[in-house]
Length: 121
Image (cartoon, rainbow, N blue to C red):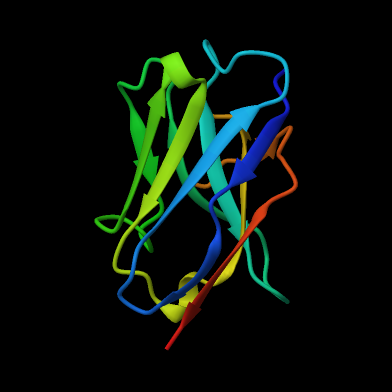
Protein backbone atom coordinates (compact mmCIF):
# COMPACT_ATOMS: atom_id res chain seq x y z
CA UNK A 1 0.00 0.00 0.00
CA UNK A 2 1.15 3.57 -0.62
CA UNK A 3 2.14 5.70 2.36
CA UNK A 4 0.28 9.03 2.11
CA UNK A 5 1.95 12.38 2.78
CA UNK A 6 -0.32 15.37 3.42
CA UNK A 7 0.40 19.07 2.98
CA UNK A 8 -1.39 22.38 2.57
CA UNK A 9 -2.83 23.05 5.98
CA UNK A 10 -2.67 26.41 7.71
CA UNK A 11 -4.52 29.20 9.44
CA UNK A 12 -7.43 30.84 7.64
CA UNK A 13 -10.32 33.08 8.59
CA UNK A 14 -13.87 31.82 8.56
CA UNK A 15 -15.25 31.94 5.04
CA UNK A 16 -11.83 31.39 3.52
CA UNK A 17 -10.41 28.53 1.50
CA UNK A 18 -7.56 26.04 1.65
CA UNK A 19 -6.45 23.22 -0.61
CA UNK A 20 -4.91 20.14 0.93
CA UNK A 21 -2.70 17.82 -1.09
CA UNK A 22 -1.90 14.16 -0.62
CA UNK A 23 0.84 12.33 -2.41
CA UNK A 24 2.91 9.28 -1.58
CA UNK A 25 6.48 8.42 -0.82
CA UNK A 26 7.26 5.59 -3.17
CA UNK A 27 4.25 3.80 -4.59
CA UNK A 28 1.77 5.35 -6.99
CA UNK A 29 -1.76 6.19 -5.92
CA UNK A 30 -3.10 4.79 -9.17
CA UNK A 31 -5.55 1.99 -8.56
CA UNK A 32 -6.29 2.98 -4.96
CA UNK A 33 -9.41 4.61 -3.60
CA UNK A 34 -8.33 7.56 -1.46
CA UNK A 35 -9.93 9.76 1.13
CA UNK A 36 -9.65 12.27 3.92
CA UNK A 37 -10.66 12.20 7.54
CA UNK A 38 -10.09 14.68 10.35
CA UNK A 39 -9.71 14.72 14.08
CA UNK A 40 -10.19 17.70 16.36
CA UNK A 41 -8.81 17.79 19.92
CA UNK A 42 -10.94 15.74 22.26
CA UNK A 43 -13.15 14.48 19.44
CA UNK A 44 -13.43 11.24 17.55
CA UNK A 45 -12.04 10.73 14.10
CA UNK A 46 -14.50 12.00 11.46
CA UNK A 47 -14.80 10.91 7.85
CA UNK A 48 -14.60 13.86 5.43
CA UNK A 49 -14.50 12.62 1.83
CA UNK A 50 -13.45 9.74 -0.40
CA UNK A 51 -12.85 9.23 -4.11
CA UNK A 52 -12.63 6.12 -6.23
CA UNK A 53 -9.34 5.39 -7.96
CA UNK A 54 -10.97 6.20 -11.32
CA UNK A 55 -12.28 9.50 -9.99
CA UNK A 56 -15.78 8.58 -11.04
CA UNK A 57 -17.25 8.26 -7.57
CA UNK A 58 -17.00 10.67 -4.66
CA UNK A 59 -18.51 10.62 -1.18
CA UNK A 60 -18.79 13.41 1.36
CA UNK A 61 -19.79 13.80 4.97
CA UNK A 62 -22.94 15.87 5.35
CA UNK A 63 -20.97 18.43 7.35
CA UNK A 64 -18.78 19.31 4.36
CA UNK A 65 -21.05 18.57 1.41
CA UNK A 66 -21.28 21.56 -0.91
CA UNK A 67 -18.19 23.18 0.60
CA UNK A 68 -15.40 20.63 0.09
CA UNK A 69 -14.36 18.92 -3.13
CA UNK A 70 -12.11 15.87 -3.40
CA UNK A 71 -10.27 15.25 -6.66
CA UNK A 72 -7.31 13.36 -8.02
CA UNK A 73 -4.57 13.99 -10.57
CA UNK A 74 -3.00 10.72 -11.66
CA UNK A 75 -0.29 12.50 -13.63
CA UNK A 76 0.85 14.24 -10.45
CA UNK A 77 0.13 11.24 -8.22
CA UNK A 78 -1.81 13.56 -5.96
CA UNK A 79 -5.23 13.72 -4.33
CA UNK A 80 -6.63 17.10 -3.36
CA UNK A 81 -9.19 18.37 -0.90
CA UNK A 82 -10.43 21.82 -1.86
CA UNK A 83 -12.07 23.40 1.17
CA UNK A 84 -14.23 26.49 0.69
CA UNK A 85 -16.46 28.48 3.04
CA UNK A 86 -14.46 27.20 5.99
CA UNK A 87 -15.99 27.35 9.45
CA UNK A 88 -14.33 27.33 12.89
CA UNK A 89 -15.77 23.84 13.42
CA UNK A 90 -13.64 22.63 10.50
CA UNK A 91 -10.56 23.13 12.67
CA UNK A 92 -8.79 19.79 12.99
CA UNK A 93 -5.83 17.74 11.87
CA UNK A 94 -6.65 16.40 8.42
CA UNK A 95 -5.36 13.01 7.34
CA UNK A 96 -5.20 11.40 3.93
CA UNK A 97 -5.59 7.65 3.79
CA UNK A 98 -6.92 4.57 2.08
CA UNK A 99 -10.62 4.04 2.86
CA UNK A 100 -11.57 0.47 3.72
CA UNK A 101 -14.89 0.93 1.94
CA UNK A 102 -15.89 3.56 -0.59
CA UNK A 103 -18.70 4.98 1.51
CA UNK A 104 -19.40 7.75 4.00
CA UNK A 105 -18.15 6.97 7.48
CA UNK A 106 -15.66 4.29 6.50
CA UNK A 107 -12.50 3.61 8.46
CA UNK A 108 -9.12 4.18 6.91
CA UNK A 109 -5.84 2.34 6.50
CA UNK A 110 -2.33 3.68 5.99
CA UNK A 111 -2.79 7.38 6.70
CA UNK A 112 -0.10 10.03 6.81
CA UNK A 113 1.16 12.31 9.54
CA UNK A 114 -1.68 14.80 9.04
CA UNK A 115 -1.81 18.51 8.36
CA UNK A 116 -3.28 21.08 10.74
CA UNK A 117 -6.17 23.26 9.57
CA UNK A 118 -7.17 26.11 11.86
CA UNK A 119 -10.14 28.33 11.05
CA UNK A 120 -10.46 31.51 13.09
CA UNK A 121 -13.79 33.21 13.72
